[in-house]
Image 1 (cartoon, helix red, strand yellow):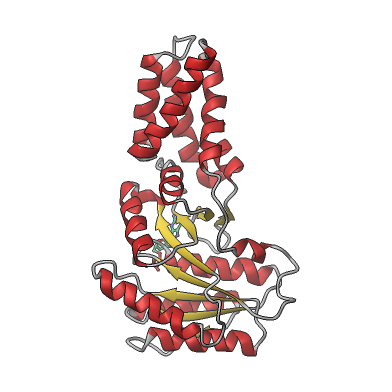
Image 2: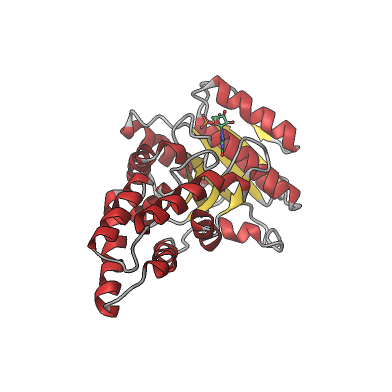
Length: 304
Ligand code: GDP
């Protein structure tokens, strides 16, 4: 996993430093561990939770050697990353999806600049190369660049993009994209939306209008509301995630830019605090730099 190398080195290095010259896990080691988790952007609440759990294990087992700390920490973090699966892009990862008729609709939300358009392009590529029929909807009509970029991604991947241009009604774009998906018996429709977080009421209204309108075509759409967050922004990603979960029901997360960052810990905190599963991680700018999130692989990459 070349993409996560930097995250990996950092976690591993810091843990080794925390236990150097010590044979057992004591107060001082736990203090260092706490500092390490906070620096890795796990977030204070989740850090406290992890430390509490390790403290309990230490208290119970009396003696915990520092050589075991690595394994214990991995176990605790892996457990924290276990989230109930609500929406389910997961079904799209199964090769048999599509036989049932209705397209699976993903509404993608997130603040500008986090890598939303790129993630949609990567998803389109992922599903398209798995032999699925994909339609994109350019409902981030607030920015000309967003519409243009999505069209470019559509051409690059080879999938249709429904667009009415800039400043058009996003709900109408979403409606047409979902309708197009039904008409061409697509497996998946991915709708881009505007991420103007500075106006919460507008954002909420716009997202619910998009939902309402697409439900005229497919009553249970969207099947997934995927929030895209920039993992390199650490605690800022955290705050954005909180705002978005207030504005709409987020069912899964895509965390981008985890290549070249030592802030991979943010994934742990966000997933824990929001109780939302991480579905994808972005590890580069290329079409293929998107990975299906697997908590064990991820935790391993942090440590080994
Ligand atoms: P949007 O405004 O949220 O739609 O963001 P874009 O999709 O335009 O992406 C913003 C910038 O982030 C672009 O330069 C992308 O190439 C870059 N980007 C997106 N995802 C990743 C990623 O996983 N890793 C890296 N290194 N860059 C990314």
